[in-house]
Amino acid sequence: MHCLKDTLQLKLNKLKKEEAHISEHVLKTNYDAYLQYDILNDFSKLSSKIYRGQLVERLSSHPTCQPGSNFTFANGGGLVSEKESDKSLKQRCSDMRHLSIQNGEQTAQIVVCGDFYDALEQMRKLKDELDVIPTQFKLKLNDMENLLEQAKVRWNEKFGTSFLQQGIAAVQGVVRLLTPKSSDGGRRKRVKK
Image 1 (cartoon, one colour):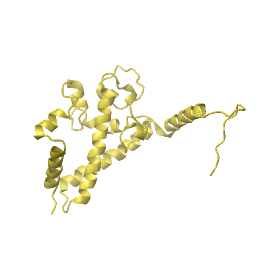
Image 2 (spheres, helix red, strand yellow; image 1 turned 180 degrees about the vertical axis):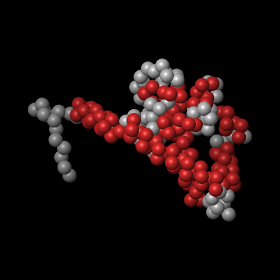
Image 3 (cartoon, helix red, strand yellow; image 1 turned 120 degrees about the horizontal axis):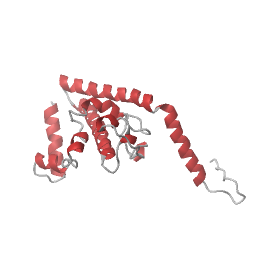
Image 4 (cartoon, one colour; image 1 turned 60 degrees about the horizontal axis):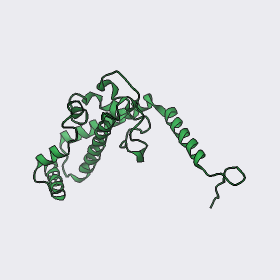
């Protein structure tokens, strides 16, 4: 019989062994890149009590990456051109463009959103592996699924299809510029196979 506590302990022990760590303390302190920065320390943690109420806004903050996947370049995400803002970090975190690249704010946002998606994926896998699913686990999984759905709605309100279509049109324009021209000055046509 697999219970949640045992399954998680096995995964932690495997990680410690694979990465040759002696204790959980090493895992907790060596993987926390923002530990020395007070403001970003809380901002970079999914468990932050200060930013917990902003999670839907943070998950829906990337103008070109819809909620549901990490903010990676492969998913249309990554760092974005920033716009200056005099608002607080808590107010600015709803739009990646208002977070600083140089101060690490955009990276911290990417980390938190990535942690959320990783945790959600792990919980979905654990749900399938466990023989008995604790009530608190079910509630937390449902809560995370609801946050994701809210983020999708919020992203559409903020950036919507028209914003995404603008991005697609911009990429298509770049592709047109980079497409080699034929010797007669016209664009080469694709050959259908």
